[in-house]
Length: 136
Length: 136
DNA sequence: GGAACGATTGAATGAGTGTTCATCTTTTCA
DNA sequence: TGAAAAGATGAACACTCATTCAATCGTTCC
Image (cartoon, rainbow over all chains, first blue to last red; front, top):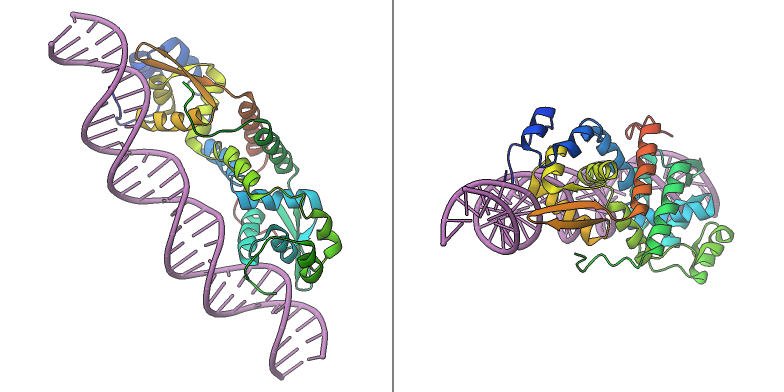
């Protein structure tokens, strides 16, 4: 079967009929995460997959609490851009905010994300990480 | 200082002059990850921030080794789309491939990514995860 | 040799998104 | 009361990127 087709979902029948290795694939049917769960996982990682948000989260993991003004100055970005990203992080319950007068202080709300970010940073630092050039 | 400005990099002078809380910000200058490193971290997470790649990586973490044909059937996607994503993962040294005749077998190459993916999956499963609705 | 097949690749399309600019809200202070 | 500041927000723009479609490469089998 070449290139593209209708691409229906996997069934045991289709597996037996079309798989190159039915014995390998059969036990996997129904065990691989579905599209909805994959969307949630991807959204989780997408929060960390932007350089600006990564720097914001790193700064907040170092400082415990920062206002938008100081955060923007520290990262060398506009307050507008910072506010937009902080809003996104806030809607995903990754940061919390505390208003004092006209100043708004942000802090990390999610220890899970803190942990995941630390993992990603360690990973990025360990490898030589040369995204280009062939391997095989 | 309102909204947007030239947004130069942070310096001790600018911190003292313009920060709302210089004492908070001063010790952070130079400690927050820079733009290049943030790019690398973001790229690392971006690999996992796509539902299709997430499902591919999950399938490979369950199966140890799969050919493109079976993988596409198992995930209900076209072989072309699978091949495109596998190429991206390969260039980032996340998967390895092994050619046998005209069949190409892919497997996870990076235990780090396997670990990070497991974390993200756990995170996405634990929380109620309602990305919408206000908090504050 | 030629047909069938697994896999790859390039161009094109469409959706998603990060930043900028302008505007607006809220609070503070003179 | 009015101006200035901190922050938020919406529209617009540019850019990235995942998928599709079509074509191609390399291998196997008749």
